[in-house]
Image (tube, helix red, strand yellow):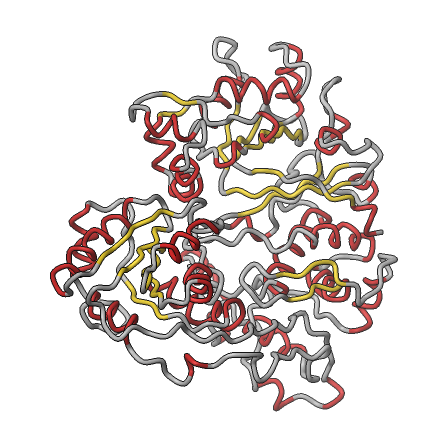
Length: 138
Length: 446
């Protein structure tokens, strides 16, 4: 039986017979260039667009400890608020066990993960929170 | 997520740590930090999935290990909030250098250039036409717009990339288009990039107006199949523009977990306007355009369900459509029904829908969904739950209803579009969850 037919029957490309992996009809990088004459070279235009790098912003100063601190827990409601609530309940329990006087506040964002919520930022400031945890998303 | 953490740190002046799965952390600390926030936000990472899990599983994630550092997760959280800032985390101001992309690539052999384009993920991994300057110049003859005109800035994953007419022309050449296609592709480029979501979105491109016939878009038999050059090259151009101008790369900033094969040509087709029943307006006319306008409309969604209908008079085709549409998530009340002219004729002549709008209204009034099924969809959870929590109706009311209650999730009939295409070969239709945005006038790009 023709080897090409056998390969097709098995679901493989007959290109395997050429010694190169199926689909690798193009010569590997570097191979052709060594064999190319200058007259074979072509110039093409670049489809890519340079991305503007973001202006760097430093992190806010860290805390020196968590005793007697207020931690704001922002629930982004990614695929619903339940998972973040489970996380934050457990985190609150853990923090209360390990730090004295720590207080947590959990708030769900008004428009989920993708919207905006200026009132939340005002609420965080008004609460005199010392740090924030933002989550969860997958 | 990084946006929230950045806002809190900048506006509230307090440290913030993000909690996310590893793919989000990878994206956030790499691409997003570089091109979008400029802030090296600290993250901890939890296993995925955490949604839809019993409470005990999520509790275990919090009491377990941080997937980034291997330390106990809460130890990592505390460290993120209290560790001194590194020099890298203190940097402010403009970045030292901007990324640069030369207008021309270094000369090379055709084979090597093809390999490079694939390696850069600038293609759909089908063979492209290499964009020589001569070919791009010829493509630019298809429009009166200047090559350096910026038609939009692509910033969906950061980078604020200015998409020029010339860049669109390069992609149009790569896709195999001709200059006469170029105004259509420019109009389409205003809608780039295509859907890019972990939920694995896709797009639908509908061509309306006389240009369908002038450029021989397929509106008839096999309208949605690989049987027509204009449908193929225009749809393909959308994928190439999205990838190059959007800089979309797999596992870098394109995180569609399954992906979507409809992204190869975004279901580009023309409406069979000549076969519309009397009284049924073309898609673009329903949007307020003139019948003589040439318009391109882009929809975003995920899926379609197909059926041969109209075979049983006791259960007519619009009943089947209604039933199947109830399977969709109804995000934004969006849906699009693509039907053969034979189906449109039956719906009008036998079942009395004298306009598309009447049919859309009927769907809106008659498609029901089990309440728990509606809320079970992750997209709805992410988008509609916040509205419900704010007390916005109907979401707040639905959220209080029993799980087995029936709701009517397609609240806005104007978001349900009807498009007629096909060759009158079979009483065939697709119901889809694609939400079509307002059309773009192709004539503006001639």
